Image 1 (cartoon, helix red, strand yellow):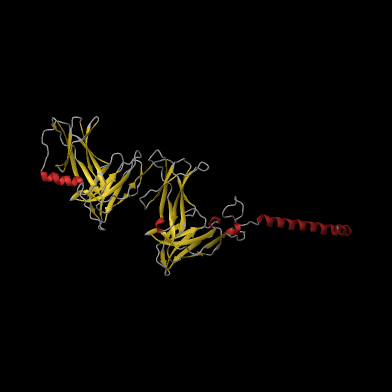
Image 2: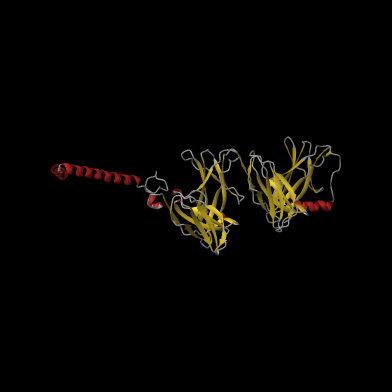
Length: 485
């Protein structure tokens, strides 16, 4: 439906141009829009023209043509004219100015105001290159793109002083239209939240729907938190996953960032426990989209700056490649300390990467490129020389380098037993005790002291027998009495 302003525009054009050409005897007024100059389709907007107290009347112009006049003014320290648009359409978009009138004549026109209508086309995408996490004082490139062939893209920054930048579209090999905006230096003094729009050259004031908001995370130098997961770095599809960000610094809030995602989900800090501030980020049921590299940050409520990033945590999702690789060991699962041991992971399907994980280990799994040999793809994980620390249960996985966070099903478990010279075999389960002070991997049982004790007792018996034989030669009767005793 055509708005009131559009109807009046047509009426004004039919009556002819009514631009006042007298030399301005009043200072030129100021024109602005509420709630702003970028208005969604169907939403209301009010244009205000503000002049000096002498002003008695205000006229509004669009593209230099008279469209509305206002005889009612608000007066306090200045006079203001009000122009209302009840439902924004593409016909209301354009460049506006206003003038004020007094008994002495008309003012000069105000500075122009661009009024834009949004929502005419599908929204573009907005991302940060290389990442929305930016060190304080650094620069970042924002990428706005769309499958539609827009001629231009507009980037807007939210805040008290709305800023916008316009770039002509650049062709992309995929057929998408895009534009790159350089932003910076980024500081934590205020919020860095952006959206972008697309438009065509023949109607530059008619924009698309806005992109999803992109907020830059400004990182500083304060103490980095730790990012942990109780499930370990390898999780299975369908499993529930929760990441924990914690620090000994009393942060008020934490943010979790995934390198392949633009969003920055945030969580309020939990109640400190034993002087430790922490926040849990439940990622719900694991799917292939959860695989990736994560970092977390700590911050304070009264500051927009975040801490230095935590060390990266890679979440690997198993079960997205149907086949299961095999795992074997050379020379065998029972070896002595100091020997050379090789774990061989193999798959008959094409795989360019293999991973080896140890049960209960907090470290990320070992990763090797595959080799094609004996009609199989394989990787050799060498442990040379092997020590008691290598004792444990191992599994291997396969993956593709194009999707490094998606793994196959695990191989069957392989238990590696390591003994020291002069000891007997002890499995990892047998080496564990109920004592909390006992390490996860105990050393093999040592019988050296027991053997020395037994040899000493045998030697003592031989000495006693020798003494008895010597005395028997000299005094047989007394020796028989001593022996009977």
